[in-house]
Image 1 (tube, rainbow, N blue to C red):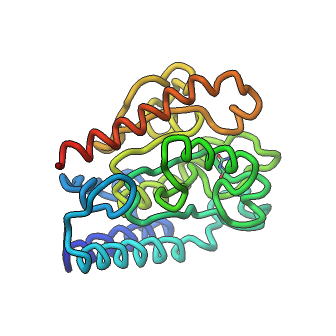
Image 2 (image 1 turned 120 degrees about the vertical axis):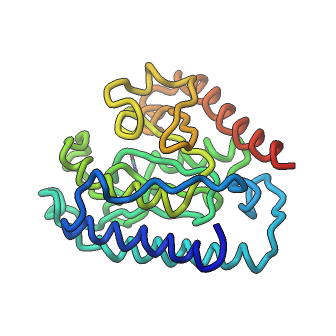
Length: 253
Ligand code: URA
């Protein structure tokens, strides 16, 4: 994906998401899955890759993705599809590197995230930062989003209709960022993206797939704060994430 076509494609994704928000496009047809770029890992300038693309092309791509994400964010910054919108302080869109090879998907904003508008900025976010650092990845390199963008009251699990209402936004984010790998945090995220019913306890240790993108399910950091004994398992998942990113990079050498 390069040049005008890339810009057009990203623009269309953002437009489609906006149309979907206004109810003009049925959810099933909202965002067409975009073909994965074979050179995805090499085109990312950070993490462990050696960027082989010209600097200008890479800068253009960052600009295009940033604009598409901003356009998407604006298209639903005042979303009122769910009743919980009335209680939120801030809609938490997600944030990070528009060229991220690794996209992390959590459940939904907690109290701190709702106040500050930044995904994983509270206590579980602190642990998440440490987990990433353990595999030599910084938060600046990744993109972080949630299944739902508004905080459910008392941090209850999102309702199926809330998940459905937010699905188009998340898919649009994935389509714009085109991560080489998705890591889901907790059961809500893996059920929503891949399994439907089976949670992280059953699925961790495997590499699954969503829209052709490998998906590694791991524990939610807030679960690890409550159950530190499971950090050993989480470490195995983190090594899996690191290994997949490294093997994709090696394949392009
Ligand atoms: N828990 C989540 O799932 N997401 C956040 O952004 C914060 C806490």
